Each structure stands twice: as C-alpha cells, then as structure tokens.
Length: 143
Image (cartoon, rainbow, N blue to C red; front, top):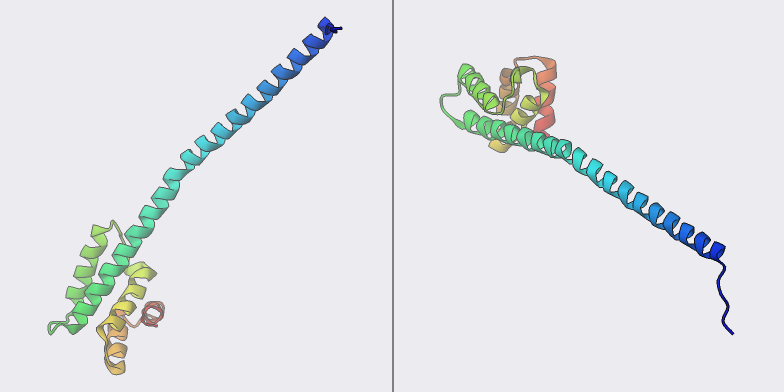
C-alpha cells in the first residue's frame, strides 16, 4: 500500500529547502565579501612592504658609502654630507640629517670599515656633529 504525502508536507519541505539554499548563498556572499575586503587591504600591505624595502635600500647605501668614505684619503665632512644628501634624494628622503636611521646606518658603515677604536671615536664625533642623539644613533648602529 502506498501512502500519499499530504500537499501541506510538500509545501513545508519546499520552504525548508528554499531557506537552506538562501542561507548557503548568503554564506558564500559573505565569504566573497570577506575576500574582497582582503584584496582591498592588500595594496596597503604591499605599500608597507615597498616602504620597508626602500628604507632598507637607503640604509644599505648609507652604510656602504660610509665605509668607503672613512677608508678614502680625501675624507672631507662636506663631501660626505653632500653625497649623503644625494643618496637620500634618490630615495625621496628629505631632512636626512634629522633622521635617526641615517645615523644608525652610518654607525653600521663605521663598523663595516673595521676602524680602530680611536678612529671610530673620531669619526663618530665628527659625523655625529658632536650632537648626543646623533652620536647615540651611530653607536647603536656600530653595536
């Protein structure tokens, strides 16, 4: 004997199926909107990464130039400052002489040059212009 399903039960089942599929589509919709927001935020992380790489490049160039400068026979502070200004300009950095990272990189360059302690102290004082914050940053880079 076959039983017939009452029409009201069929309507209830159809409504339940429709509600489930609506619920699933809203889930995928929220998932896709999350993906969109992730994509929207990624340019800023790329920008931050680009800035980090730019800063690393600047500091590396300052370090390398400082090491070359202190080993050269024509070590002139004005020449050094002009060249640092040009390096900073290549990286779009203005007021490099007020930027702590410049002096930390100078300290790294002095270390790279392998100076004796008295030579290091003389260059630290000269390049740091006897200003405590600059000389501390040079020391930080040297360590």
